[in-house]
Amino acid sequence: MSPIGGTMNLGVTVIRSRHSVRKYKDSPVEDKIVKDALDCARLAPTARNEQPWLFGTVQKRETLQAIADLTENARFIADAPLCFAIFGKRDAKYYLEDCCAATMQLLLALQAWGVGSCWVAGEKKDYAEDVRVLLNVPEEYTLVSLVPAGYPEEIQIAKKKILDEVVFFERYEEEG
Ligand SMILES: Cc1cc2nc3c(=O)[nH]c(=O)nc-3n(C[C@H](O)[C@H](O)[C@H](O)COP(=O)(O)O)c2cc1C
Image 1 (cartoon, protein in one colour):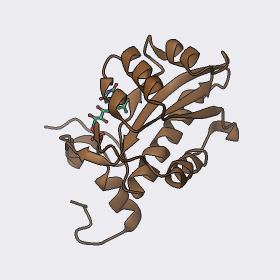
Image 2 (cartoon, helix red, strand yellow):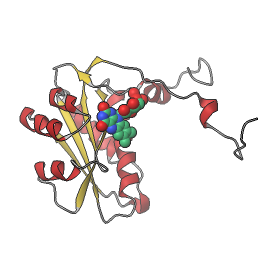
Image 3 (cartoon, protein in one colour):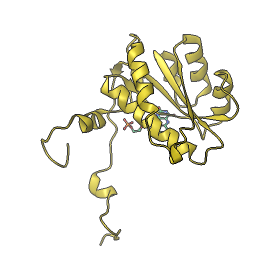
Image 4 (spheres, protein in one colour):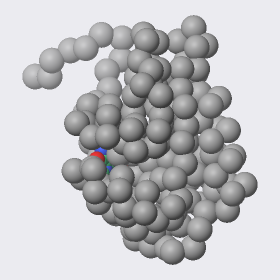
């Protein structure tokens, strides 16, 4: 529920409705939606406007299975119709922030089209290098995130901290 009550706004409605989706319908995601989501990702802000990234998409079942086998907590990639892989240029100082911003734009663009997805860890995982090699991505890039996607079969709603618990105004004060 929005802090501003019943006021409707399409942008924030998309943001509020996004949840990680890990079970997908078999139906493929249309190419024009995939392209539009990628296009939204590349519009994300980046430090010095460097845009230090590469966006891959994988739809071949055997490649999805191979990625799933490499991951620790994302075996469900094997059954997704599609998986995006976001790579950052290692020598760009802020590649991690930049690629996280792009990942978030990708998630939200997919959500706006009714496509569910899940951010899957990349950069800090041992499998980052294996995924790079599997997808034949040049060594100057490193995996930042994987984003399996598809029309939702099942949606789980994660519990979130309430706003009052995580905000402060002007200056942080200890309670009590
Ligand atoms: C950096 C990052 C890494 C994540 N890695 C995984 C993962 O490896 N496997 C997975 O199932 N979910 C992963 N998630 C999704 C989180 O579990 C999920 O965002 C969180 O539980 C909150 O749920 P929500 O996305 O529905 O709000 C990751 C999310 C982020 C931001």
